[in-house]
Image (cartoon, rainbow, N blue to C red; front, side):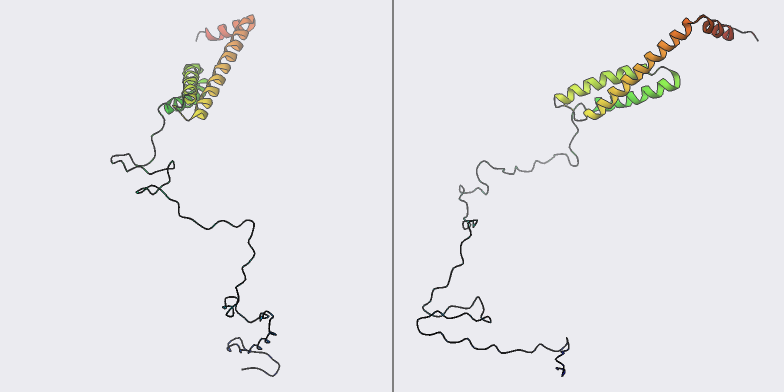
Length: 192
């Protein structure tokens, strides 16, 4: 239903307008396409349909590749292997010598704890450095893949060894001072 001012309800069906008929071309001239003519309409008899211009980037038509009889994959490309029964499920096994890097880091952390708790951190620091270097060597050979853990163990081991050497040098310097040495031994040998 149309209102007097031209407003139409959105619920009303749209009104169909009839297109004006296309003018007839003069004999020997091409027909003028109507704006209402479907682009998929068949051309009049005797006329060739116009082809759209070819793009310089156009791809050749798809062709089915020819392979040897009985193969579904082109030669030289990946061909799936049959399923092997009894293969392990889940994550793949870690490389052979990953435990060396883990031990290096654990011993390195333990050496720092031991240094500050009972001053014998070097007992764990030396094995941390050794296992760290062995793990780095295994990583270069492709037998391990945790070089970061090994490097952490080497660093913490060398820091502990360095702090132990500094502490030993500091204690040696303190005991070389006679007043400190006399004061230390006199306090430690007092009688009750």
